[in-house]
Image 1 (cartoon, chains in turn purple, cyan):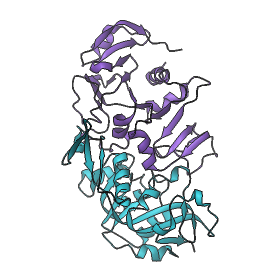
Image 2: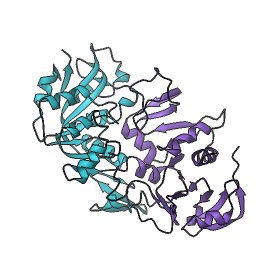
Image 3: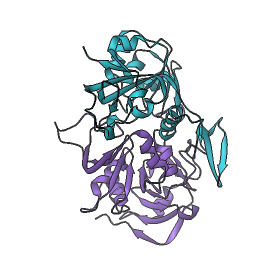
Image 4: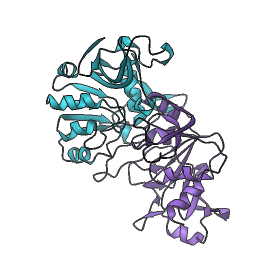
Length: 217
Length: 215
């Protein structure tokens, strides 16, 4: 199983029936593919839609129904649309149960940096700062390392997205929880030993008394 | 409100004007108004919008044509030309969290002196801003935004100027329609008064100045 699928499948298990969930671009988008059958999730797209459905088949796209990247989406029965002030009222106002975002770095305290690399990549923060600040639960979906360098670090060197700590980081190697202000290794992916996770992590990790193996099926 | 041709509506916009332009990655952007701005060779514009779309789409066309002096937006990441011009110093870009941007526009249109948001506290966004504590939590004081013109894309407009929007093409449009001195609307359909149910009007007619008619 490729890293992105491992991450997306694991995060899908955090969702519960009836939740309002916002998925970021990239790996987070894949989470929607692994929602258990029969579970109803309200997926929000911050450009003004709750009830985002799958990408439409060829020829069925509607030009005025798009996701936050401007790509055509569908809307499931029961969907609703609204303006951007309402959309960010939902986000900042604590109405979003879970947001799943990508990450460049997460530090020991759970601070996330995911919106710029000074001098190199300045895309703008879009809705990320509001999402991390306002959602009830923040889950980061990212690969454990980038070009061999750890992304879970002692202290973020990149500009922070928010000072509000994230709740959970899911990588292809491990699940790390930040409840109580400490980074705790709670799960490892099948076939991955704790030592391998520690070697690939710069931040100091507490190790849960019982580290469980992530179920991937 | 009056109906007017596209050419006459855009002719009212001087060089150097500040424009709020509706749309999200070009969806809900009044494309015909953008094309006419380019045809009339407007320049030195300040654009307030969520993003600068893609090269060749919506606001991206204005950026590519060097018609824009300054952009105030939440995201420019999908338009490499905006980033390139920003890093080269050819265009000034002010990046604002999306929820703060829309709320600053809302404050501008709703007569508010600003608002307090937790977004950006402890990040580079707080630089130069006043911080206030309310009930033990820190907030940034964010100030209202106004513009000379709002360029709005509606789905339906009636001949009084009542507007509705379609699906995700709504986004920034109804909020911007409240926050500019002059509001120019391009509607996909112009319908007789009474065709839009009062419950379905999303922007009330009195705030609209011009609805553009198609030749």
